[in-house]
Length: 522
Ligand code: C2E
Ligand code: CA
Ligand code: CA
Image (cartoon, rainbow, N blue to C red; front, side, top):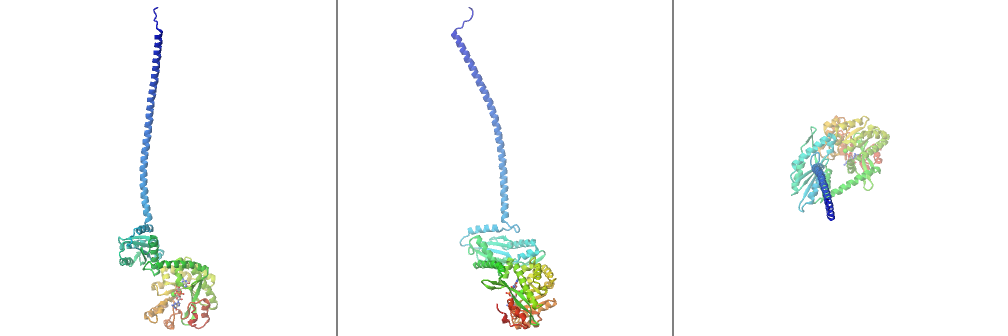
């Protein structure tokens, strides 16, 4: 047979070969597919990576720009911080370092102070600055502070650090202090810059300063103590009459503590009814009879006994307590006047006014109220103000006096001759009486010029239709001189010391002058 017979084993081998080939082919195809898939995946991955890279790159750039932003902001913040610091350390008006800056500076100086080194602190405070501020307004007050800064800078040198630590308070820190004489010279120079006037609102104003001095380490080892002590030295300069300087002394703090103590006791004194009024007679020099009284306050202190007004009125004035005390004085004196008037019609009562009381907004109303409440005749009330108070703000003084004159209240110019005694002003003041200050009477018998002054004052008063009262009459020679000089009234120890009302009334009962001895219980 012609067909091809394949050996069985060959057939099997062929089939096997075919199977192997097919398997190989399948394997190859699988591999190929895998490879293709892999390739595809790699491409995909690549794309993804590219994408990721792109996002990364973008966020890198955005971080970079945020970083730049942040750096900018940081710099701005730093700048702000610096200007804030400058603001916090600089006095806006004078552009001098302020209290914070000064304290920090002093802290540092004290930390590095060598044992043999001395530094000085000077506290310079403008006297009566409040008056300028009140009468001219704050903008002129500011102008003055700027002028003062300018003048101070001119006399200070590279060893001095000037700062403004309060409203009208400057402080100078002087380092490398060689000797105190040089320092005294510096103080003199500072005082000198105030010897010529300041021009404010086209007018000339003379300004004085009170200077306190403290030395370190002698007067304090920390900035806090030093600033406190230089302040109390300045305070002492004020107490010594202003326009002067004082070196710190440890006794100052003691005095200051006492003062604060008295002020707190004064506060309670009114509630506890510790004040009393004494009355000093005013004599008509023609009839030699008591025609009126001046009410003078005393503090009946529970421990110290009778305390005189010179010791506490200024303290009450400083704290403002003088206003309620003044109202109490006015009311009590008017109540007394009412009682005495019933038996002795026409008798007058003089009441002292303090600056603060007179300047009080409600002053006129307070006087009206007391008059109404006590039922006195306002014509018998005489309110005493000093020249200094009267001339401080002359327009206010004139209108206030006029307001009260409408109902008959009279005014007296107290301590006349010790203040400005400007004739121009006197002419304008609607006062009724002049009280010649007792300092002229002290020496009148020995000093011819005092006699002339008294006679001139009396003539002047006559020309202005004013009554004259001489204060501090202690002997008959003085009385005679006053009578010959045509003085209207006299007041003094010759007739009576200020006495409590039950003794004062004795003088009214008598028709003649009482011997002065009877009225000397003080
Ligand atoms: P002032 O108003 O000048 O009162 C006269 C002062 O001179 C009184 O002192 C009086 O005792 C004293 N004096 C009177 N006659 C003589 C004399 O012949 N010789 C001498 N050496 N002195 C005489 P006082 O009572 O101590 O008062 C002192 C000052 O206190 C008063 O001076 C007055 O400015 C003030 N003051 C007194 N009472 C009050 C008040 O109620 N309110 C206010 N704001 N101040 C008052
Ligand atoms: Ca008086
Ligand atoms: Ca007086």
